[in-house]
Image: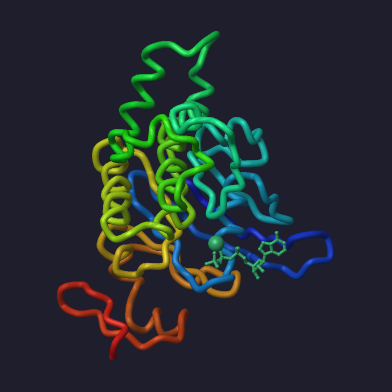
Length: 252
Ligand SMILES: Nc1ncnc2c1ncn2[C@@H]1O[C@H](COP(=O)(O)OP(=O)(O)OP(=O)(O)O)[C@@H](O)[C@H]1O
Ligand SMILES: [Mg+2]
């Protein structure tokens, strides 16, 4: 499902300064899209607009041909599997129970064997089966991050929106999540939107990029065309060399 953002403006509070200034971009279907940009430029703010946690003061967002204005948050939750950058989820309960919550719209009167199997399958897909009976609140930061991704996968959404899903992960787990994102698109024909800071991971695993700076979208398009040495300098103020193998080398 195609997602498009048209001319949205957003401020926190009535008198707050404007954070998003007429942001326009699209997120094509069946692609991995990376949202890139410096700290504080408005990536999370836009992700929250897409989830209707933030309501823009003007502009519109469309899921296919449906405007966000005509959708309740519950309906959006079925379309978008969202993993927030910071989760305040402090839950007493096991990982199995926590991930099961992602499936609540499928649960009938009780939890059936197939529900338990579905959770077990997702935990295995993320290589965290051994965490199944642990208390969520006692996990490490990286373990929690993977469990949050697992919970989002249970929703079987059209679009997955991950806000820095790899920020606490070691390189092996980071690669696993990036490959998982590719698999969601290539094997399940869904769309993945992810906020990432690692330009190399983005360039290697994403198809498309939305590049932001100071509340504006500077570029959006095929990642190999828009993520250039010139754009990186313009947006981050960092000189790089993109090597022939596609490695973004900042040590120049
Ligand atoms: N709840 C809030 N109330 C007021 N201002 C906020 C709030 N959340 C974010 N901001 C401000 O909005 C701006 C954009 O923040 P946002 O979290 O969207 O940035 P970001 O691009 O996700 O940054 P990062 O890469 O550090 O996560 C920042 O100046 C921030 O201080
Ligand atoms: Mg953020």
